[in-house]
Length: 153
Image 1: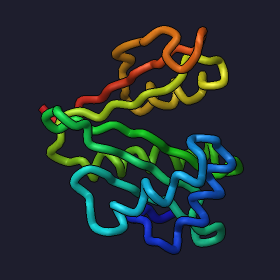
Image 2: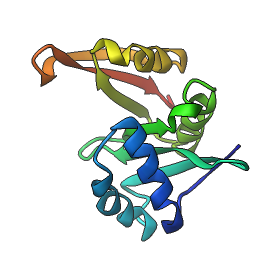
Image 3: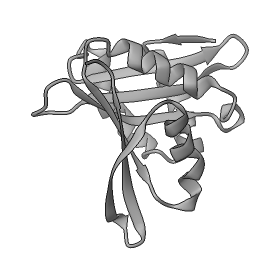
Image 4: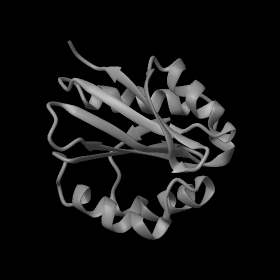
């Protein structure tokens, strides 16, 4: 397994992952990833995870939180369905954290729906603590759960 910054040749693979996971509409990827591909790593950080046999199997997207001091938001982390639950996510999130050396806090937002039980457990297993709940955020009965992890002191 290899974790690296994406290139424009990875866009089609990332779109496949987006179709598998429904993290956000694949047609949004170009405008989201373009600034990073053009060298803007001050606001956005992208990583891809690849294997020798399957190519790009996962990605992460982290964005700096404006008007804060050294706070980043992990907006998306996703893997092809056949690679979910295989430990690659833990390795990728560890690399995200390493890429943010010197920053203070990484937050993650997810849903309270039962479909996201494994997602919330994943973040807890990676050392994230539930910080807040915003009731009915995504829709009635679907709360926003915010996790946080202190990266440096």
